[in-house]
Length: 304
Image (cartoon, rainbow, N blue to C red; front, side, top):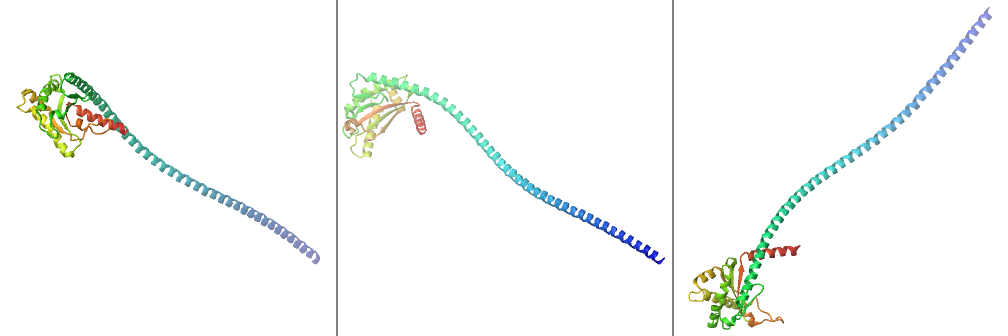
């Protein structure tokens, strides 16, 4: 009986031992499974962490790239604004230049119109001068008077030896006779109704040779020119009428040139006899203005 009980207890003990072993084995399996699961989870977590770290790095790189792009865009925007500002300035300059060009075009048109008017006056003056020169040449062509008419200017040159003694400014009797014959014929043309309104000035010029100082010759040339003018307009002269004298005084002037314009021989030396002379010349209205304008235009053309 005792043996049977012992066997029963042994069997029960074996059973529980087997059961506990089985439970231990199961527990170990669970532990292994859990460990594997944890390990797998850890591996997956690490992979996720690494993946997240990679994503974060990519995001950082992308963020840097975006920042660089933003800076580039801002820089390009600044350049664009600068270019727009420069373009605006250039447009302003272009507009100013266009206005200046329009103003210059307007001035050029006005100048062309003025030049046309002045050219018409110049043509008229040239025509009148040519007519006067031809009339003077015809008047004195067969004259016994020792005079020469300049074909370009109409100036008439008189030998001073006819009018004055050497180095003197008082008219000789022969000089008075010469002027008494010359001046009425000269003024008959210049102060005629056909030409009187075109004459602005009749000038008597005295010239000397190069002997002596400039100032002494200047005084002599002035005195000689004055002596001629004085004799022609004096009340005692009867070769001109009072009306002719009055008309002459309105346009008459005198000037001394000293030896500033000597007559030269072909070899370049001074011809003293020819240099001692008195010239009488005329100027036409508007002639000086047109001459100055032509000089200015010539200077402008030369500057170009």
